[in-house]
Length: 453
Image (cartoon, rainbow, N blue to C red):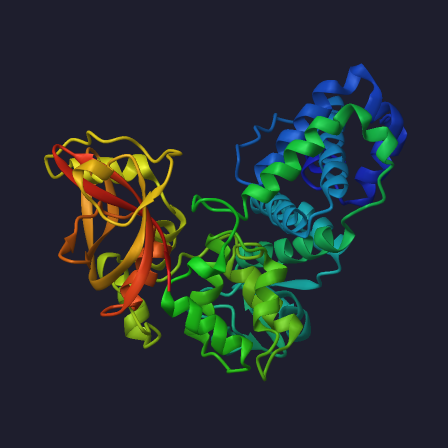
């Protein structure tokens, strides 16, 4: 068999025999300095599945090159198994299947016949292209690889004499799906952890990078309490057993995935639905999050959420943002005194008072002689307004509270939207506010750090 075929399709029986005859033992592969570069390439090949970098394959012309390529693949399977994370397994299987499909697209007809035969895919040639038996097509397509146009649904396919007609690229796409399913089912393989001693850092790095794929740049692990009202309602409805429409499930799934929630946790949120079926729900979640589709779908914008009819109870922060994730990021910033100073300074004043610090005693008024002291007193909430403020090249969504206590209480803008939204919800009421008195110029200002109802 051609070395390039052995390298491109390592699941073939001939490839297995080739490695057993000419390759090293697992212990030598994982421990010998002679295979250090192979182990490094196996790590990079696995890292590619997480979208971190592109692993550059070498051209395979001779048997030694083919052997090295297959050994790299074996090392990557061992690493994936050592990490033993379902998200990595699915991404690795999809990446490898995609790589094999590229090679199969360019392969000769006898290689296509060999690969499909090994996978149990029965097809025939027709004057128009290829034909696959009706039952085989359904088993392989399963709507998993369908796009938004539904082109893979059987109703949209040409059928003749119990067979589905396909072009060559469509046949290789179905073949890729079978490769992906087999790879995913075969992993993890049993791993001798003692033999992985020299690859401990690689395993550690892969675990870290796998975790990062579930955490977008939104300020750390997911915090559902910081979700926008629309998503909170969808989560509450789902927990209450409401049968969410498809567009609502799509919006909620993309949002939860973007803020870093793993697939199993997302599945758990839908488990109370009256029509919940684990297999269907898992397919939908995996497809939306890119595990099986290769595309990570984006969270719908606020405008789209409104058109869906699932924008509910918008608050003052909603009025200043255009996207649910933008809302989440604003909530996740929490209290940032330096950021507050930058926002306040954008209005032309310069902070002259101290930063929050330990100081003796607590005052109940904001005045020049209280600068540098902690404040705690009852105030009345007139209102809280939101505003987008540009400082340099960065935009901030800030809250501007208006409080009264024997007159107006001058305050700094707020970036802690958790506290700002609580204040906004207490419009017209009296609450106890805790903060620190600083100043800009000669004007004392209150930096709010919390409230007590």
